[in-house]
Length: 162
Length: 140
Image (cartoon, rainbow over all chains, first blue to last red; front, top):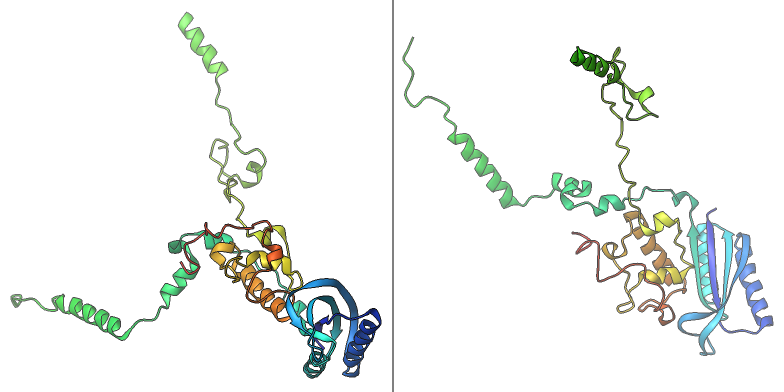
């Protein structure tokens, strides 16, 4: 089961309501077979832009950010996402997969980028298998044909017979 | 008589000596030519090569996280709200790819504004100068 980070932004709620909303969210995750590893509060923060709470249509400028770390199946992710986003107490919910296998150390290639295009490997590769238009191909064919024809294949005057 | 004595003294004093240029590595790397220590030492690699330059995130070892929207917004234009391209940010290909992914995630999760840079962070320290890109264009 892949690990997901469930980030939840609630609408502005009292402490008791917040507790209710959080337990409800946690229970929906658990009901769909999720294993919750950790629950974090990211604090009461300003939202990046004004949101509108559902049903009450109240503007939300700042609210509580929460983060659940949960292992669940892909089907469970889809279902829980639709349930949590339609919850009246949430403003924004997103489930983002954390893939530890993707975190490989790749060599920094800034040195390669800073080289001039003539010295760059990527440009050389582009040149090697570049696409050629029909007419360019024809022109190259004709030029080589001409060069080939200009090479004398026989003597203009036949050499004397032995 | 005097002349011959001086030449004798010179021959005694100035003797061909084996100067060692590279004291540490000459023992292991000198070619095994019998009785010729005056031969130039050939090193395997140039000791004066500079270390390859690294991009800002690779050299500092900072991981990009979608929850850290303040760091991500330092790579976003104050004027247009768009992510700067790699010839301006000066990041390597891998880090630029990660940056774009992280910004997309952050916007989707509601940590970061979508069309603009948050005016709260407009006066954050500049990591690069958009008017002085490392190349004229990202494809150049």
